[in-house]
Amino acid sequence: MSLLTKRLRLFPVLPAYVAVYFLFLYLPILLLPVFSFNNAATTTFPLAGFTTKWYASLAGNTVMLEAAWNSLVVGISVSLLSTVLGICAARAITRYRFRGQKAAAGLIMAPLFLPEIIVAVSLLMIVLALGVELSLFTVILGQTVFCIPYAMSVLVSGFEGFDRSLEEASYDLGETALGTFRRVTLPVVAPAIVSSLLVTFTISLDEFILAFFLSGTEPTLPVYIWGQLRFAAKLPGVLALGTIMIVVSIVLLTFAETLRRRAERRTQMAHALP
Amino acid sequence: MTAAALGPAADTPSPARRRAWMRSEEARGLAMISPTFLYALAVLFLPVLIVIAYSFWTQNYLDIDRTFTLENYRQALTEPIYRDLFVRSLWISLTVSVVTVAFSYPVAWFISFHGGIHKNLWLFLITVPCWTSYLLRVMSWKVILGYGGVMNTGLISIGIIDKPLTSLLYNSNAVVITLVHSWAAFAILPIYVSLQKIDRTLIEAARDLGDSRLKAFFRVTLPLSLPGVISAFLIVMIPTVGDYVTPRLVGGKDGVMIATAIQAQFGKAANWPLGAALSVTTMVLVSLAAAAVVLALKFTVRRIR
Image (cartoon, each protein chain N blue to C red):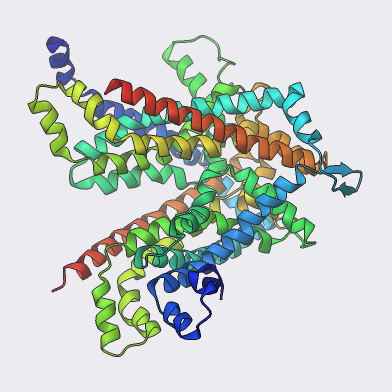
């Protein structure tokens, strides 16, 4: 046993395992850009040569551009709505203690634990039963309820540890509740809010099932891509579009993460003030 | 308004006491959470209730017959096609969650115990692939596992196989691989959080009292991280059972899951009550299966201790 463990220690099993795991995680993400610059309509090795024609073909594609516009409209609305609602809930949870807190938070976080297709189907039924036409508006409604848990988790970690005595001092000095929020709370938690906006925008940009069920005749980018996947000839264009979307997502996420960390640091600093 | 109706002040008639309550911490908390709570109630809870109601009704050509019936459930549970889909969906999502948790635990452990000062960076790098387009990640697995795909052409060029394998894509294994990839970060995060909470001195104590590294892990670290393992398990298993995209893109005939049937009932077949019954049955079955696994996990860990 001890001989075996000694030998194992010579070979770094765990770091090697983690490396393989990362390779597994990133492989699909790295392959898309590779084939999007490949001068062939098929996705096979060896590569046929470098081209940017698949990207060029996107520029004149009006249907795709319209879908991109739809995604932008939905993304901005969803991120604003879910962040505002997330702020309310995250404040309520980190700042106050009240009966029913756990139950309310549980309902708000429930979309994380529900099969997404069931959220989509149930919304579709109620929307059609009420006679509301399917549109980007219905997509926004659905994606918002789905995004709130993610907004909450970012915001709660940004609001936690915020020193209440700062707010109380502000009240004592005669500031109103709204004024205190604007002049004391907001500056400290602003990075968390921006981070939540970016994260929810990213989720909305990539979200498919709800958009697929609820968008009617106005497709978002993922719904457009889904339609293209049936045609093998359209694949390289889809890969180019996908590469752009992945780059946008990663840039937004990196911003969000930087801000989230700044938010954490700020709440800690505010906490440490004498 | 709502806050007051929910709170204890609703049954205290005195206006003075009501005003006092309105200024209390409880009232403020309720008022603060109510917009989000009401939104979730209206856009999540009510629609799910409607689905449950529909599952007890019947589709009568273009109208809905609102007499109570269990016929949809009888159909959902006894017709071979739906029974097979349920069994396969549960089996796939169970496999996916067990594999994801088992493969992610060492990574979470590594970050928590050996992540140094860059723990947050490690975690961020793990979550990045999960936030990028879900559809395209599934597509990418199709490119990797396909007949002329990366895996086959790669294996041929190394000389391990002579002709492409057809068994990689369009079956339930492809669905499992793709879903494990999609949900990896969702398993790592909760496990990592619970590992971070463990008081390191407890592990040192176990070592000082003569436990080997491995024994200390099974007797201290693993039981204490069980809440993380359980939430990782639930967070993977419950949503994956209803996955629509992965089975459609990489599952082929043998990888079809229940979501395809649900979608068909709301689309072409236009039988909402049956679709609703299939949805409710999916939720109930996956909850029961998840509860069974959670109990089994708790029991096993207690035995090891």
